[in-house]
Image (cartoon, rainbow, N blue to C red; front, side):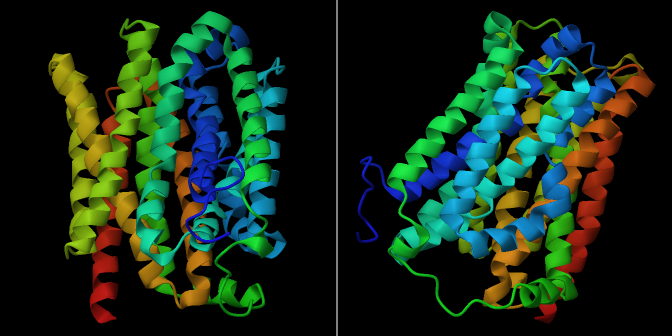
Length: 405
């Protein structure tokens, strides 16, 4: 087949790879709308809910770099199929969990499956599409996470209220199984991909050493970490915050899904502005400042009896997510630029994913602990502003590095 042909299912295999990423992201986003139900059904505390939110990132936090290297050696398509199978099994098994501890372990297993799906995807897309289509398809891939999260947040509240959280877990497990069948049928094996990987494979230790010895991969990875920590902390707890405010389940889903989905706008805008010549450091600075300001307006304004109107606070959260989306869109582009060489691009992206997972693991429990300590969400801004401040310091270092190249 040529680079513009479709698979046996009638869908371009490259688009199917994107859909597989979205289906994996659904598992990351499926927990927030179920938190209120889980707290009632299993007696889960708010801090335990924070760990459940972040447990899906354990595999990425510990193994992201190594899984990226492994995927290239065992085969990209095989890695994606294994990941979809792990997601299906863990999610269906979670439907029968009777204790928070079991659910916590299975969420960590889901994190392993998630990584095995998403880490090989960009390389698969590069192999499956012609060069003139590369930017468009990879640009769409950049929105897989907010899109999957938004869909889960939109459908989850009504689903869990009607059929319960076990059915929600089982349904998404079944969806991963269907995606496994679709990928197995429609995506060509690695050896039969229309665009072959260029160059000989290096010993796996060499790109690892080169990546970890260079300052650029560390700076972009740490920037990703502080971004991801605050984004998941705010978006992950929005359903609980809105439920506590007395909103109905349907409105909770719509409002939270909009916050997640608007992040895609920032991702796409970052790519266009970079192409127009905007300096990456300017985009990162805009993103971190907007996240600090948005969180402050949304949460700090509720302290000391002074509160902005609800519509204004919601607008601040939308700004937090939308303009904050400039950060990942910029960092993925920078990951290619600061990699030590062409053979370490995938390793650098894997290192970014690993630190993103560390941020997502640490952020929600910290925000939950602060909320319990303060007796409400009004001090959430302290955590997010702290993350943004670290991000701005890292951005300044990254700008100096780019100027010196």
